[in-house]
Image (cartoon, rainbow, N blue to C red; front, side):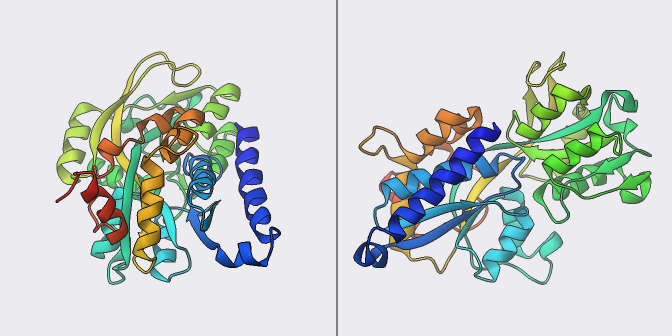
Length: 330
């Protein structure tokens, strides 16, 4: 997996350098457009890099780069300040950002616009097998990593804790880390349980399970029902057994959607072309979505028919134009 990540980054750099050194006329005609993703241990990063490479090859006037980011909340704030053009974020975070709710109370991101919903993101609760944690009720009093501070994962953690009637004060310790850092803490027995919101299989969890006995903690049916009633953007999902080493049974949990969002200031013509390149096949017989599907199983969930699923913020006019042409909206 690490090798694939390096290939993605190197390919993006080579493409950018090719443009810069191809001559003044070529470089002058090119626009640069970034997709800010997430930490390198998650799924946003490799899929965003693949999509960037595919779009660069399919939209002649633009060089698209995929870059690592902090988290969904941070990505939305960067778009608010016009520091990045686009990003991958969770749909529940995008909704809160646009509406000015939760972490965005009093600081709504009104320039946030949607391009597409990509794939379901599953909330995975991972505990060391020797931690004594078998169900959610067992996490109280343990050492918790709720995700990076301000991340979509932390939002999900807080929502689940609220559903259980718990706060951070109910834990022996709380530390904020991304996917890879959290996995390392579990491996070193410096934490008992961590929450990860990402498409499965998640690289950091796969790698952790190879060296450490882990338990994927299920969410009980009653809690799932309560959470889906409290938060309309959640739905139940089952992670099949054997997804990770040592996983002997299916695990019920909840899911949200990963979305590609953009600053409303990006020209409609460019967003239209990027949206079209995401979904329509190029000369090589592949769309941007097809390229992602070739490398990661979760990429197969990126489909035009679900492009608007869970889209709770306004579409960018360029994206809306494409979906109108395809008959997905009026």
